[in-house]
Amino acid sequence: MSEPSVTIREVMLRDGLQNIREVIPTEDKIELFRRIVASGIRDMEITSFVNPKAIPQFGDASQMAQAVLKMKPEGVEVSALIPNLKGAQIALASGMRKLGFVMSVSESHNISNVRRTTDESIEELKKIVDLQADYPDLVVKAGMATVFGCPFEGKIKPQVTLNFIRRFYQLGLRHMSMADTVGFGNPQEVKELTGICVKEFPDVTFSIHLHNTRGLGLANSLAAYESGIRIHDGAIGGLGGCPFAPGAKGNTSTEDLVFMFEEMGVHTGVNLAALMEASRYFKKVKKDVAFSSSILEVGVPVPKGAITKDGSEQKWNINT
Ligand code: COA
Ligand code: ZN
Image (cartoon, rainbow, N blue to C red; front, side, top):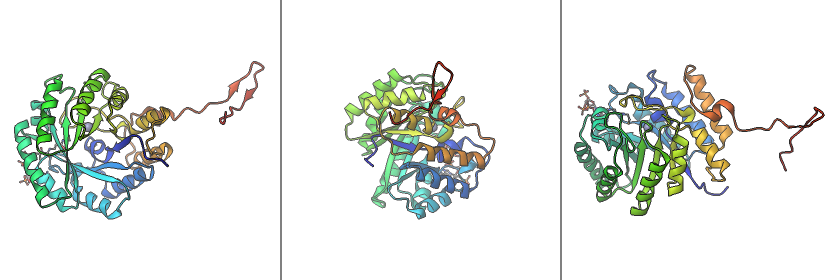
């Protein structure tokens, strides 16, 4: 099998779970991880090192990290979200080395989400980057929330995001993620901003994290792809959402993302049937979960057979 042309990063175990109040047992999360990896996903956010009082779902972040790292899934990038230095320290002590720092490019959402101004978050980020002196294999990704709009402040100008990117770049960061936390972005805006980023910072690996709040998740992903973004986040079943962003809805569904790219001939390395199995497994764990994924709902297209005028049905020859 050739190398995938696009990397689909599965964020269900972080973004998907943070919006589910009922605490899912750690063993079920680990089994879900195992099944998602078996489908061919090679990049996964596995938990969130946040204050468990803020999000009780992640009270098991350390156990989750230790269990997943013990499995040593070959060729799979595992990362976790951190909002502050404390989260980074706990994550490192649990063995994690790839950490996605989250802050919002909108002041209001940053205060709502992590109780800090953006300047305070950047000060925190500097301290996290300094940990590389003790952990040379630590990779910090700068995750920017509300890039295309904020539930409190509305649209955010591209210059605001670009200024944050420049600051992250100066700190030595070369992995960055742009998130449309509440679905404000449209394909035109996504294409423009990601296009500038890719051109202005050719040595930065950018990823895109889109919420399908207003149905533009896939279109926005495609726009980012056309600008050269090759890491796209998705959550199985279209789950997810930020509990500190009013009106937040799910991520673009991973099943739909995989379907779109594969249909276009863009190789993802993911076996869609196996991925859907993983989603169905989660439905058994949490029976009342509300999925939002077209592919999970209706499946991939399967022709029923051509209709002939005399009423007989001819079996479709799928080899032609
Ligand atoms: N992991 C575990 N515990 C943490 C922590 C972390 N990353 N950060 C802080 N804490 C604990 C502190 O030890 C302290 O505990 P105590 O009450 O037992 O003394 C308590 O949380 C408060 O610490 P403080 O530094 O004052 O943090 P805060 O109350 O200002 O909370 C956040 C800041 C960011 C840690 C918290 O708001 C949070 O975790 N938010 C979740 C954000 C999120 O996940 N959003 C969705 C993803 S985008
Ligand atoms: Zn998200």
